[in-house]
Length: 110
Length: 118
Image (cartoon, rainbow over all chains, first blue to last red; front, side, top):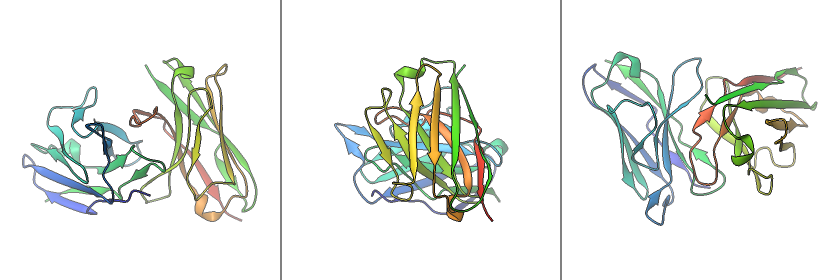
């Protein structure tokens, strides 16, 4: 199984940049596509797709969110952070079964 | 507008069975693979099972293989998860999500809560 590792929490100030990392135990790239996706989940809500295939912004997602990386190292950046961004962020790979998620990074305000 | 509405959750005793449903609307259901993903209280997301658009390909997490069965009825725009031999560790909010092949889970339902307890 491909294991995805995220830091449990990140503390950030409003209007600053937040950088959330996700490291995978195996390469999740194939034919030039990174099968890495990012989701935002607020308390009491279902997850929402933010970034797909490493760096593509999902529909309706503000340009403050961006994704980067390849292979085994990926990053979700929020710049600048707004109050509405306080949530838990999950990475997920779709290169292989079983599909796996990172443990989630809870974004907290300083 | 894509909508996914789960139902069928509830309180069930260990060892018993339960069947979840997910009614889809706003898209051509028969064109998309579908998935079940769960989240235990206060925990992260865990993929449970996937089924291709025509039910030709089915995959399960090792934690549910042999106990859970994913299926779909394209005529009824409905996805199912038959859960048997339920355990306390199956207690979770169960989401259905749309996603095909190597694509992400682009749309999620609100979830249905399954509690396994005596």
